[in-house]
Image (cartoon, rainbow, N blue to C red; front, side, top):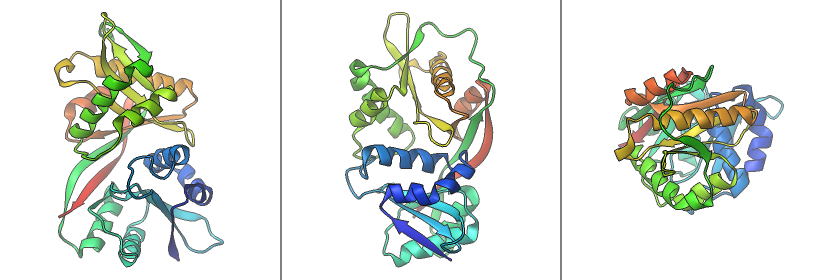
Length: 283
């Protein structure tokens, strides 16, 4: 029994693809992130170290049991896995000389990894997240003034500034190219805006490419001065409908458990909680 590591995303998806597809909901982040790397190369998220991937299987003749990936400098992202395998992964990465500032994933496996990595202490929970899945879409009524539309190339500058604001709001600080990030979403037709009656964009939401029957909504962002007017709910409903029309069997999103406003909003739209995840920082 062992962990296998690679920088080859095609190998990862070929070998671990069935494992990810077996539970595409809980594996949504691994599916969407690896798809971005497939489309845009090993530096799809940062122009630093390339993304890398891993999977665990009992032997070459048995199915893959679980998987993880990392897009440095972000922490490793764990797929669904048993706690002993998370501990084994921590030992494998330490033996490989990897330096980590944290880990992300399901609550139990992530904390097992952190305990193994730190020797049982020296870590703390950064954020607690909740994964939601769309049931029946129920857009808010009445809708706020304005309409939803797909973003165009002309919208890239303002949407890139909003993407930077979103990253700051969720505590991600990096040298990411937000303009490139938004341009890709616009080119794929996956970014939607809500514009007011005056034609001015007031909120945005995007969905991930369709992979293994699932698409994930992220980011959802409204500038601080425009919040509390229903724009985020309206544009989230619009992008959720677009994902369904594109063929998604599962439409998903993550929320910060500490943000009661967004948790309540998404549930009013028809999203239902599925599982909890955690970001752990190594102190």
